[in-house]
Amino acid sequence: MLPVPGRRAAGWGGRRGLRGRAAAAAAGWGGGRLAMRYNERELLSLARQPAEKAAEILMRVPKKGSVLKKRLVKLVVNFLFYFRTDEAEPIGALLLEHCRITKEEENVFSISFIEEPERKYCFECDSEEQCQEWIEALKRASYEFMRRSLIFYRNEIQKMTGKDPLEQYGISEEARFQLGTRKQ
Image (cartoon, rainbow, N blue to C red; front, side):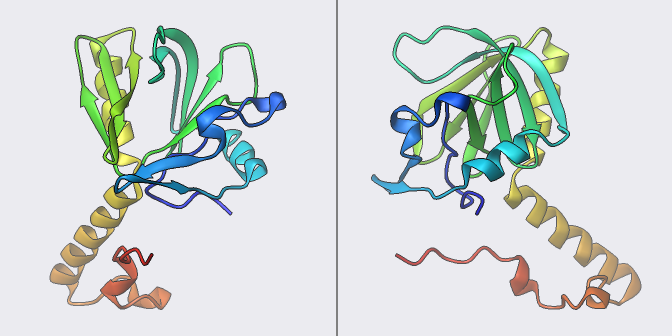
């Protein structure tokens, strides 16, 4: 089972297993902590998939005293995996839902989560161009962005042709593209 959208994926220590606060897969949500279920094998398998974007860039995690470290950062679907540059397994992953991607200073962008804005992951790129490319790719990666794009293009095609382009696939209700309300 993959992580539930809207939660951060856990950091893990590859062969060393899960660790720290991230190990509990905790994600702040509405002031409380909710556990996120995931399957470590599925996440590792996803991390090995071809990336939409990958590069070695400097990264700072939101830990007190954290410094910028060179990491291999890999965008796969709506996950941002990060690796030590000399290891094949990721040391962590960010689920890019309910987050803000922000341009910081020159060549730097950050990712923070709406439910925990004080916890910022910072990334320093080699150039302003590379920084802008990352920001655009990350913003396009979320499920919410893809959902809105699908609805927009579906409506545009329907206006032009008078037919629902998804009907041939048995998808005809817009409700299928709505995010359900969370039930506690």
